[in-house]
Image (cartoon, rainbow, N blue to C red; front, side, top):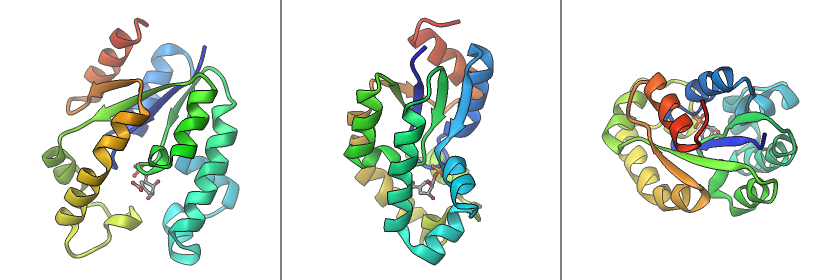
Length: 169
Ligand code: S3P
């Protein structure tokens, strides 16, 4: 079975949906951010703070290369992963199916309002930053994906939607 790759904005549910989907389909699960943290023995926040975002993005591409080689795996991307065309090209070349988890902006703003971990959101004007990033990114998520999954719903509902779309049970 080829990999199923979940992409989308921070807070869209890539990790929670990915874990449930993998369990249901009897597939492995891999989260790109956790993969990087394991390799670097450092949290994403620490990598951003100590080495900067460009260094994190380089690690992200390395992780995509390694993870895309796996089979039978549900992959949760980071919110920025597929914005780099090199990364989405790697998934495509590996024959992976990329799904965009589409959550409306207002719901993302609500879900992320108390976040303390994501480095890009530790700013005073968080709601505006989310809105700007969302507007900048939405077309790239759509371009990078094979299918768009409406995901502003409970996790189980989204998992079922994905299975229906992929004609899997
Ligand atoms: C990022 C999203 C994060 C993480 C990093 C950068 C982004 O992942 O990769 O903080 O650029 O949107 P989540 O989408 O899992 O929060």
